[in-house]
Length: 323
Image (cartoon, rainbow, N blue to C red):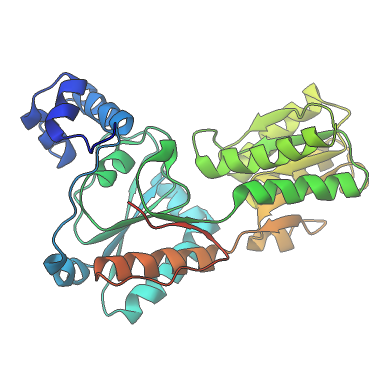
């Protein structure tokens, strides 16, 4: 569309009244899940963006603090080192600005959304997640950590996950590995897809065979199960790229149980440079993800945007500051 669509046009595309569309976008609970989904789909297709709040509300926004919304199951918030690193770095920046950090979780598929005030950091939103769609139209100051799903108009900061996959592929090729397999993260998560795509694209360009892929959910147990599947379906593999270090630790356990030596028989590369990478046997080769730097940049951009200040953008990370 050449002009910004109106709420009435979004409502018509969704087959609901403007009042119902408005209730969906303001987070009202008086709307059915199917109706909410229809409106969110129309918003996503049409690129509808709600008008931002007046700049005069910046002081109130910052006084209300920052809410970090983790789109994952609650136990993962406490067991996944990535979240601890990210929230610690974000909290340090927020403290510098004299405001406070709140943390909440929503499940990856939940249509029940939390009530939000202040500025919002959203982490780990997957394809079709209602929260990401709601925030893209809410007028609330928001920054997404990671590339947003399905090209939503959300400002974000991210690492170059495609290039991380490329680096892993090049390392395998330079060390003579040709039968490369992969353990990917959830396909609905943009970062997981990008890591896998960077690997596969580079291997294909070098004429390597097709890459067998198994998928996990970023836990060590899922890495073990995925590696067992790969050993059954691609027994000749001599290298495996794993989309997170926790899954890579699980994959190494499975290889050891199968009598495969790492890295002599099978080379393993993880992703994150998480603390677990230094404690596997042998120590894990990994692609470094600057989690603390990523959180710091995203949080500074969020706070400067809420205060109406034009930020100085870094060059090391992938940043999009147009909403």
